[in-house]
Every structure is written in C-alpha cells, then in structure tokens.
Length: 377
Image (cartoon, rainbow, N blue to C red; front, side, top):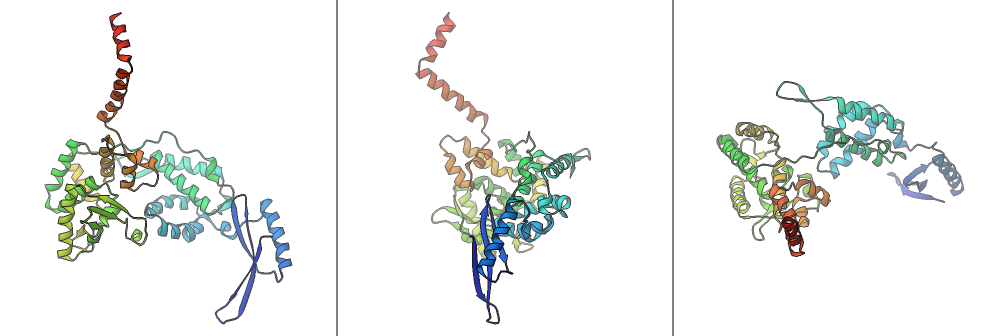
C-alpha cells in the first residue's frame, strides 16, 4: 500500500505527524495528505477509496480545482521565471489565454474549447498596422506557439487528459528564412554610421554578425566574459542565467577579437558592468528595436529583424562545406540539432554544390559515357 507517515516538530517543538497517500496512476503522480487518519489501518482504508475515486474519475487534485488564471499566476509563471530564458515572451503569449480561459477550472477546459480558442486567435488581427493602415493578420506560427504553451501548462498541471492533444496545429506555417544580404549589410552599416547617436548600434550589429549570439546574451556580456588568453566569449545568457552552470564558449575571430578589446577597455575605463552600456543611464542597453528599425528604414531594408542577424551568422556558416553541423549547434547554443537546421538557410551556391557533387559521382561511375552515347545516337 502506498501509504507513509511523516513526522516532524512544529515551531513550538511539539511532535506532529500525518499520513500521506503517494502513488503513480496512469502516468500521473498523486501525493495526498490524509490528516483524519490516526492509525496506519485508517490511512490504508482511505488510500483504497482514493485509488478507486481516481480510477473512476471522481477524485480531482486540489491544484486542478483551481481556475486557469490561478494556476498560471501561482504555479506556471514562478516556474518560468526561474527556468526559462524566454519567460517574458511567455507572459505576452499568456495574456490572451488568461483572458479566454481565466475563470474556468483546469479540468473543465475541453478540447472543443481549445479548438474554439485556436479559431478565434487565427481570425483576430494583431495590433500591428501595415502601410495602408490596416491591422496585420495574425500568423499561423504565432497561434501555434500559443497552443504549444497551453499544452505545456496542462502537462505541468498533470491534467489526466490534456485537451490540447486532440487539437491539431494550424498547417501552412512558414519558417522565417530572412537573412541580411551582402549588399544590404553595406546599406545598413552606412545608415547606422550616418547618425552618431547610433554608434553603439554599429558595435552591437558587428558583434552579432560575427558571434551569432541571442540579443539577450549579447547585451548581457561583461568584461569578465571575454577570455582573451584562450580567444573565447563565455556566454552565460541573461542576468538570471548567470547563476546557472549551462554556459557555453564561442570562439572569437579577428574582427570580434578586435571589437571585444575595444569594448573591454572602454568598459573598464568607465567602470561599466556591461560591455554595451548606455552612457546616459549607466546601465546596459535593453531594447534596440527603435534605433535598429530606424536604421533599416533609412537603408531601405524591409522584412528584417534583429534576430535575423543570428540567422545570417548561421546561414553563412552552414554554407561553408567545412563547417560541421554539430559545431554550429554548439556555437549557437541549441539543445536540439533540428533547431540549428531551421537556422541554416542554404544559399543558391551551396545548393549547387549539392547537385554538382552528384554529377562528379556520376562521372566516376560511367554515367557520363552513357549520356554521351545517347547524344551521339
């Protein structure tokens, strides 16, 4: 029988004890206090009833009696803040979910309601306005991100039947394949340097094109993160992540090394904590969207985001036949190599090398001779 007794002393030093039911059923772990049991026999009888109620779908854990909003605010968000780099993105994705499901009890949310939410989000416009002043349509990938997060919440709550599992993702989702073209790079740099107020942006863009870091990783770099002796940048992520051990090292090429030397000297002279510090505020830059988008507009470049610089870095590396995919994965800091593959958008010349390799193989195997005979015939 999955019953055990826990004993402890309270703050006044008095002996306390309580029996607990602890068992995994259909992949869900149950740990339930049985405070009314005074003996093991009473606890075991209560455990038999609990097991029967669980199998019959009668018993609902206390946490599952909470509303969606209560579980998100009390359990999911605190967990995300301590475990996810992208928890701020989650907060944005959660807002429409809480508005839609907030007052509903977790176990009362059905797959039909999740399907209705999916359709409603697909048909709702975004707050962004296009050139004609019309709200832009929400992308399928945005809706699918929300559904993925919603499913994770139900999984964390250990809902026996996750309603999201029966809801299909929107098909036709397009992956971003935008990267900075060579001619666009020159235009962007020229536009940035045209305004001395964007001098900081020039260094940030050059650093990202040569290191391929995430924006948060780049802007959180400190002088101590640059190992000049070994020629590496020690990437620790955001400030919260600096307390963790899951760091990685990215080698410095000549351009990046020269830039880092300049940045480290500047930071130490001014006693700045971060390499990319705003001299007006004395703290690091956090949002580049305004200055970056202004530079893009002046350069006549459309459809590009700051994160696309990371895609550009990955694509250039992926085009080099001597670059191993595993090495690129480690440099980018991806846990799954499939994510790395989404970042490598092969150029036309790279794809040509693929088919030309087949031609070389055909020539060595005698296929060229066959083709020539056909031409003569």
